[in-house]
Length: 149
Image 1 (cartoon, rainbow, N blue to C red):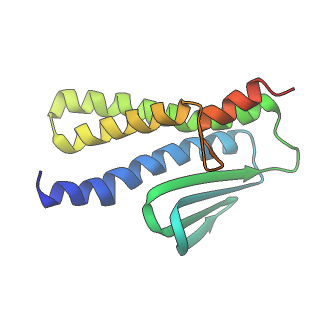
Image 2 (cartoon, rainbow, N blue to C red; image 1 turned 90 degrees about the vertical axis):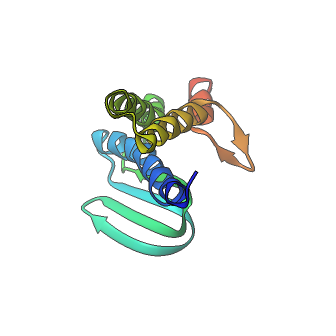
């Protein structure tokens, strides 16, 4: 693999697929009329911040690694609403997996293939229930909400 491919993977594909995932959560929160939504891409110190209406976007120095979307509203979310917001992240990745699969079947392009695989991987991993060092996967949050007393 050439250097250009690795640069694409690290600086375009991974951040884009993370943004797709977090945008799924954001869209669900907007549908449920969140009063405030914060979308954070990466870890480390804040590098760029901007706000649009009720949405605040934060891009951190290590933007390749992770993302998180937090939302709130005056009326607390119900259990099914939390499940809906949480589920929309992996669903958005799986939707884009299908979109990039279709594009790959037409164009047979390695760059599209990477986007296809990354979206599938992020969607499947995030819907799987697990907890690592206090961080919960979307699947774990859904599992908690389903079996909450």
